[in-house]
Amino acid sequence: MSKSIFRVAILQECAAVGDFEKNTTRIIQEMEQAKDNQADILLLPECFITGYSMPILNSEVIDEDSIHIKRIRDKAMELKIGVVATAFFKGNEKARNTALVIDKQGKIIMRYDKVHTCDFADERCLESGEEFNVCEFDGVKIGIMICYDREYPESARILMLKGAELILVPNDCASMLPRLKALYTRAYENMVGIVMSNPPGDNCGNSCAYSPICWDENGMCVDNTILLADDKTSSLYFADFDIEKLREYRNREMLGNTFRKVKAYGKLLDTDISEPFIR
Image 1 (tube, rainbow, N blue to C red):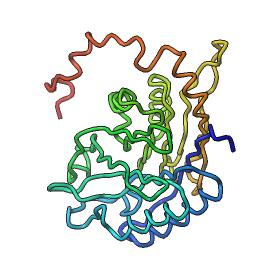
Image 2 (tube, rainbow, N blue to C red; image 1 turned 180 degrees about the vertical axis):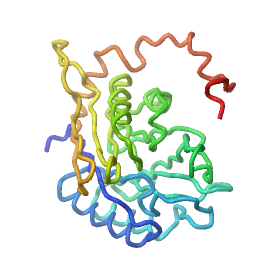
Image 3 (cartoon, rainbow, N blue to C red; image 1 turned 90 degrees about the vertical axis):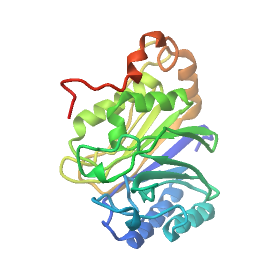
């Protein structure tokens, strides 16, 4: 495989709620399969180590020193493969919905705590993160957003502004059609690659990957869909990004942070909420 190709392994599988040991063992098995298929990094669905189930207390979750994280880090170092490890993690006062980026040496190079917690639903029991982060993984700049973060274009926008070339999206939800369109758009408008991992099930699944490349060098439209899984199949999928071509495209096209008129954007930082959005 060309050194320019960055391969993301995408797990479409349901976690065993509350069975941290079983889920960790499954992650390690999938890491081995991903490595056998020359993947650079494994992306898990949202909160896969703990299972995505609430309410949950700060005393019931894991932290970065957990034996489960140690096992994953040790396997990453052994196999020389990265992982986006997801779980409910300890917060300051409440649990957080968290993703750790673990590199090929088994080091935690970034922690991201979900900013847009679903405060209208069960995630009211969680503590929100404060910022979006980008890290450099094997020469590629990676950002993370989790599930409901996707619904807000500002999430991907700030990751792009911080330098992200790929955005990886752990997910656990249904009703995927509008959400797939949102991810397609996030890739297009920010000129970033997007990859989402989602558990299978009725009206769920649809793990996907989108390239930012929507026009070829002659200006002709091209389909930027790299992967679109079905809704019910449990599997490990793979998405290849040609990083050289991605960077060439970002250097020549007119989206991302090229011609934005930021002086007109002041209202975006207004914290007032008015009808019809008051809840």
